[in-house]
Image (cartoon, rainbow, N blue to C red; front, side):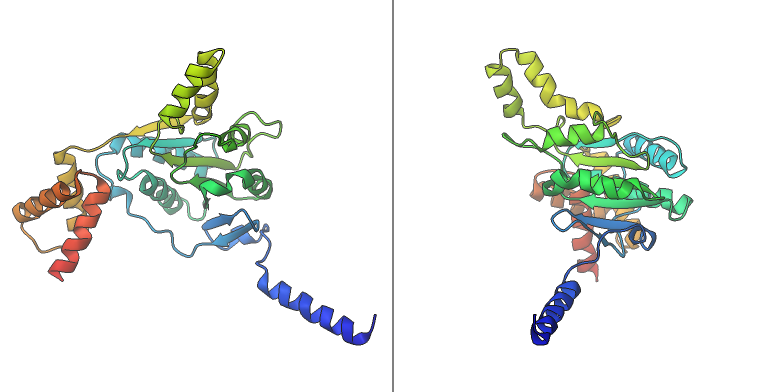
Length: 280
């Protein structure tokens, strides 16, 4: 091999090294409290600031907040915790609750937890991520937002094995938190089709819903009534220090909800964003 060719190979190798992201390692999780997992490249990308709202602003889900916060605090303190599934009405703060409880636990005990977001499409790489986290000294919450499965989707089987049932088991320093609009993560027609075509319909349905049994805390989040919706609006308005009379605030908030065809925490936040811009 000629010196010129060796020089070219060195230059190519150096260029590839600069382009490739650094491998996930023990030192990676010591620099930040939140990361995003990229399954295709096997890289944990640090997050400088986790977007979210303060736990005190999440009205209408007091019981759910208490359960998730208690579980998260126990885990942060080095005790055992449960995997958590938050399911139910859209826009009612399920993902916001996960991030708020994580922030609250880390506020009580700084840097006790690491939040790692995994995309639904990267679930097949979850065993690889857990192999990395297994050797970490810090406690980690792996978070998947909007988790659900469709017909012919087999990823739920691998997730079942990872959460509970695999011979290696879930690492003691890892919990899995997820949110979903579906109670059992599967579309209703998928379960009904299985029930209608299987030799033993009950066994077919049980196999599909058994994934939800892997979550020790399986918490429903439901839609809000008008009183709760206005309480959410009041909380956001006070947080933003908006100069507006309560009567006018409520009248505009209800009109905004009517135009959007429903009331929820997300609708309230969108209304406050609009009102803040209007009031300057």
